[in-house]
Length: 239
Image (cartoon, rainbow, N blue to C red; front, top):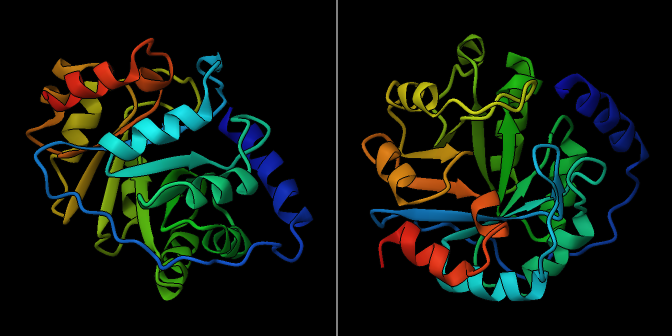
């Protein structure tokens, strides 16, 4: 699965030309100081679920009320996203925006920054050690934050620096299976300022499972599939 995604992504990157967007708002720094902080995700589809039938305008309004940041998928083929969509979300919220994509080239970071992203996802699985450090430094050089994501033990050696934001994805990008226990164990090994639990967080017990090792939660499907999104937020946040 992941090999197909990256092959397609390389073709996408080659087709990127001059960016049509011009950033009009300052870069926002996320505040993850609460006991539980949610990065709420926007996407129209995913390989693990299929299509989400949601009202994006309504979602942005609710997310802006309860979340600390919004994750926007910009991959088009597999997640139905785009930089245009990120630009639109950025215009309609005062929350920091995470550009969630399979970043393999500086051009993608340039586009994300211009479209209004404040944070960029860097997935260790799809980069070698040199690429990861180069893209990490480039991201911070633009004034953005970088969220470094890991899933497999064999990718840990690629992180020879101390990222400010470190996320562990409980979902295997090949099989799409979720292993929350392994993700929790991996999160416990890191000593970084901000640790983020990603994938498989559906309810308050899942949040409490990860709380000993993380206080930021990247949540998509639980919100996108919910019939009452505000109630889901309140359960997750214990409001």
